[in-house]
Amino acid sequence: MTKPTDLVTVSGGIAVSGNVADFFKNNAQAGSENLSAALPQLKVTEGNSQNEGTDGQYVAAGQFYYSPTKEAFKEIRASIMTISRGFWAMDNSDSPKPKFTQLVGGMMLDTLQPFVMFVSGTRLQNMWNFGKEIKPFTSNKQTPVPMFAFEVLLGLDKNKTNYGVNHIVTYKVVRNEKNQVVLISDLEVLNLLRNGIDQLESTFESFIEQKEVDRNTGKLLKDQEFEEGVSAIMGEPIDPTPEPEEADVAEPTQEELASTKDEINVDDIPF
Image 1: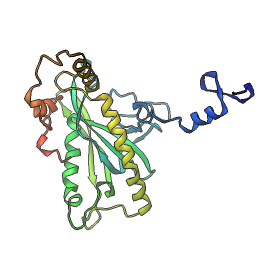
Image 2: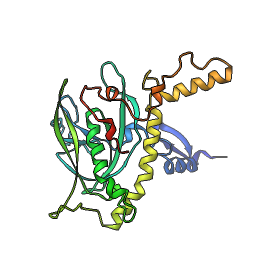
Image 3: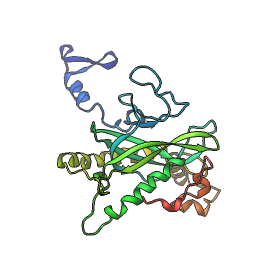
Image 4: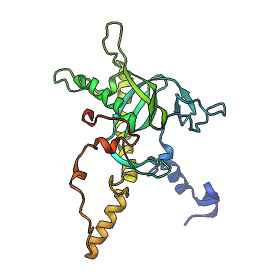
């Protein structure tokens, strides 16, 4: 039996035993690592963004914003560690609708800080072009080079759309004076990058599981699957409306992707 003297007060003024308090401390992040609020998000600042910088002022449009430290960057030297599968998620418009999205996970090489970017709409094409550029290296049978070993300079370009001007991320593979790609050769850094990929991919899958929607109905897939399971158990019809055949196509259509009415070539998806 726990004696009163053995009790420890934890957050919220709750008294628990010392052993339980130690357990809480050692497992404080278990199960909640993938909450969206905890993601080290790298954002693109637009004119209507409210990204507050370290000086308390809003960061100017056309800069990257790193949410954990509130720092702003015009460009970032990075390693692109992993890119998620494509999925449909509701956008942040006044009338939310499903939008094809991919997640980019990487590390800022100057500070060795990890980051996550959400990529959709007009920002997809440059990411796909980056994948095409490095594919001859990553798929080389004799001397392959993994994606995370490339030095990549992330920048921002202005992009005019039917809805005004926004900024799209550019991915410039760093090259030397001989036009040869610059590869990360520090084994300690390479191991750090490789060891972080599994955690990023696990985080991505957990996030997608919570946010992925049916691209036709906008309904969360996790809720839809639960309802279908309950209907099956209860012996009720799962869904009187058959799923359209085109919903099984892996890649989004031109019309569906171009939610901003900008052209995106879906045939260029390399991932």
